[in-house]
Picture: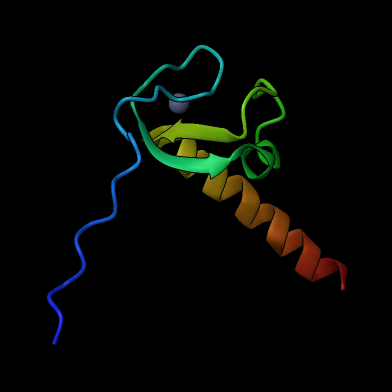
Length: 75
Ligand SMILES: [Zn+2]
């Protein structure tokens, strides 16, 4: 029996501001930049990760959900 594994060294979540231009809220999620740019063209192409704040993460989910739905409809 092993004890629960220690939490992985957390990503520095709160430390990174949201990557969305002009936002700067503390991020709650890190997406890969490529993934984030599927919803947000306006993200600067810099680095590989795109921290997003709660609001923009929600918006990202909404936009990528629409995209997925469209893909399904296209079949
Ligand atoms: Zn934001």
